[in-house]
Length: 639
Image (cartoon, rainbow, N blue to C red):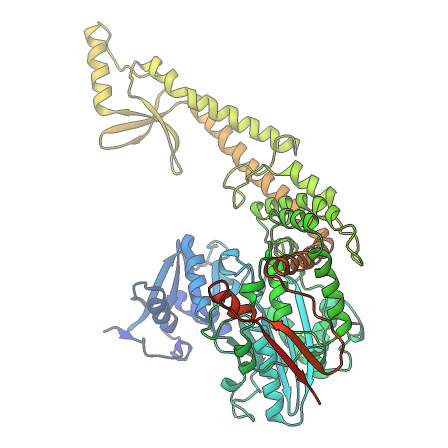
């Protein structure tokens, strides 16, 4: 009698004696990724087992079944087609789960009955890279926290943009440090927070009191977090001998958080972390401290109901680019205290406010600029596809016009245009390439002579085959003869049984005996109502087509890899362009909003007084019918 282990919380605890080899292989891999939903590749499906299967069945609305995995052992199982995996992965990640993708990484070899398998990708809420799973106008941060009594380190990264920052906090007691950590995490709104298993829940405050609501948590072994280990991880990654150049050399908790986070990313990102090319150390003292209640009351990024609309961000965000939207959101969520920096920002906004023509031209140019920041990082990490590079090309082509419009903007360094790279991409890629290699032509004719040669051979062979149907109908006299192709039998000439019989009768009626089929027709496959044939010449052209297409596919993949690497070599320059474009987008946006809504520039004095005349609440004013809002004066003082 089979035993259902659906209630077994730890499948690895089952005695492995008597298990089928597939079950043993699964348990060995699952043991390495215990906190993930393991998608285990079996043929054309990803299967989940045990508790993962029950979870997947519930969250993904897929059938829960079972599979015999040993003597008296039947385990829960639920599967999805491999070609539809991305959508299912997105749903699990959106629900806060981590997904490990286990692929068949080889073929069955002599003496072995089991296909080699291994995890090739781990997707967590904070390490998503697929466009379809990301909000283009918001960062997808992953953060790490290291705490030691009344001090703490916080590091955060967005692997889709390459941003990596760390800081160290200090408070008067353990409770206050946890509250300070909570405030900073609330500002960042990370999708995932990583911490040591040594960070117990019985600290001064439970984690639920300071972790942002909805953030997924990742726990890693305590031995990964000591400052010596973290320093080693960071210095090895950045190829430096000291962290002093990053500004955190004397901040052990900041180092622990950054090192712990980087190691977590290294463990989950199999394509490398080339996009993490610098570490920035920042101080929270330069920004206004806002607790959760204050943020809710100010409705900076969300309304009191948790919606984006009717928030300050919704009023101000007229940005044209995704990186501009992300920068504006960051500025709103982290109000500055430094008057000099504030004044510099206001000067840039005022420049756009006063110049209607340049402002309009800049905003028009920005319409055709895509997410250079994330596109560049996809190239740097080697996961860019043809459409990514086409989008990058279109964005770079808009930069020269944008740069000309801001040449007179005070204090702005010249924007590099990457004109050579834009031209190279224009010469290389067709106007609308497919989403992936192998799904159609990617490169323009003339870009690579070897590609052109194989493409011509394949096209000529396909044209010969396309004309074959008419030729063979004339040769055989069978008007219903058709040329077909399938992946198993290749190209064939198909003649139905009825058509062949009719042709034979017609030949007899005309005094000709024998089959109407030419002598070089060789049977290939017999069906219920038809027979499929090939000829030596058809086989020759089939070989030409398939060989040329196989070679073409390999050459095109190699050429595209080289193109991605070429773009990656300019990654630093591209990210510099992205940062400048984001700032220009925000400055011009705020200038446009100020003109449209009649906002005026404040005078910053540092006197400890706030004097507002005819003040208007930006959110409330936009929610009321026109003319109903009544401006008010306000006078506040520290005295």
